[in-house]
Image 1: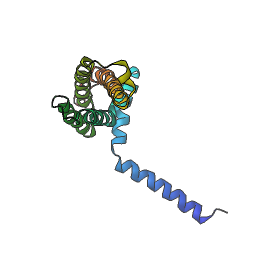
Image 2: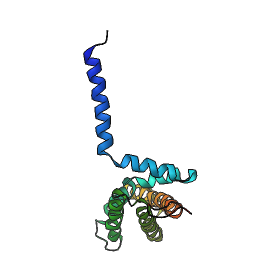
Image 3: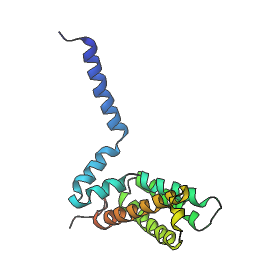
Image 4: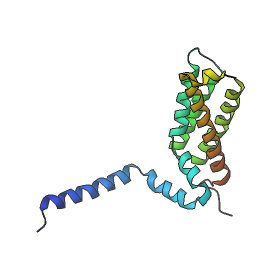
Length: 157
């Protein structure tokens, strides 16, 4: 005999899964984009589809340059947050291009500042290294996605 509570729990799980799929309607759109993407870009596309990298980069850049306030480096976080906004509104390819371009610009700017070897192992040095590593990852993955992915309105040739 089956227990009525087991049946109710099973139905609740199925209902919960259906609600999650409805709520996260982006799930089906992202699976459609992933199936269209070329096999070598799938990892870069999944990395760039997430809004986390530009947001994390904007947080690290702001943390480094708010004390003391430096005007030019503080121009980067709003653009990176705008890139995240575009990404959340399903403009993934455009977001990847903006994120890659501005990450590359920040990487060039950050490489110009020379740092003594002993300063690289302090808290500020580790944050700077993490920021530059994330910039490099955004530059590579965003460049691949922007160059090889198609937008929704483009025709397949």
